[in-house]
Image 1 (cartoon, rainbow, N blue to C red):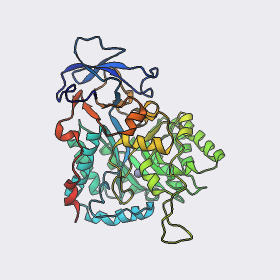
Image 2 (image 1 turned 120 degrees about the vertical axis):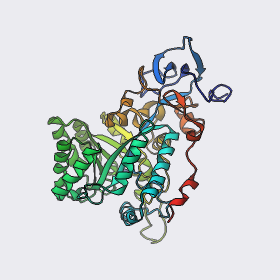
Image 3 (image 1 turned 90 degrees about the horizontal axis):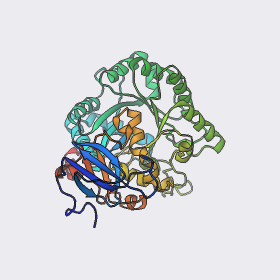
Image 4 (image 1 turned 45 degrees about the horizontal axis):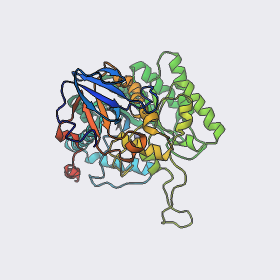
Length: 445
Ligand SMILES: [Zn+2]
């Protein structure tokens, strides 16, 4: 019988209880394979972690079920999420999708954004996520009030505090930094609302503006967050420029507050060039984010050259070299990226599902045991969250429990039987399942 069968697992848990025989991934807590621990939850926090449950409180036998800390999603686009429900279509090409969404801005209203973003937050909460970094398209850096989606996201950030910690990062092309006054206006707005400076560095982008990104980040005390090298066309790799600047900034005391997402091109460079760049990244303190959903879909997506109009099966995959990055100790996160928008028609802000996809695509052995940090502690560390400490006595008992005892069991049925605990309690029934898609029907113009 599943440890979460209603006969064994009440709707309302006591104030103080043991989760006995819990399996905690090795990536979060060094344990010999096959060994389990007992976690004492008291007053919403983990009070102790022991080899076995000594009693003295209600004991729930997890019978080897997996226990993870709540998920932290380092890379999402909540302003664009569920635009398919609003009538847009998948564009199957990065730049076509960028252009299509840009045309759609004029249609966006506060109510429509609140519907789509609220839906996304409730979905992520049901899946067990406690913190999200979202990008927000920032078409005009000179506008001091920022775009409408920024204002809506900031309001939702306050409303959702305590359930999901929302981090908001700008997204605009690096060329927009050419106008120093406008860029400064934007950086000041970001700093006032504790946002982060995010930039899109595309092939052929004017990388001469990258030093200005660091000037602004250091002046306004902002994290830096790049979409970079999201393509498979060598020899253009811009991430090396960022790594060199990140290293210099670190030496000046800026710390390791730069993340680079995508970097797909690293996966198709020749091995010598790839290794040289990864060595530079490792020395720079950059965090990398791999986005398997979007990049498996968007990269090498096209038509047969000899048979125009006929679809072609992809041969090159849009994955940064995660094993080689990990071997160098580079902090690595998997993220959700786009969901159900012109960039990607799937996704559901579920990091366990993203880990399952990454496990297949990048051949991760024993992915839950060995890579669970990529969706929990590593992104939490980058965002400066207490969840960076993972499971330890004293941390808030925000947990994801799964009946699977091995990576094969968990990732074979990532949704099946998952239990989300927040401050030691199960989510209320109306929050425990993701919302119904019909709630988005009003977004269609
Ligand atoms: Zn992205």
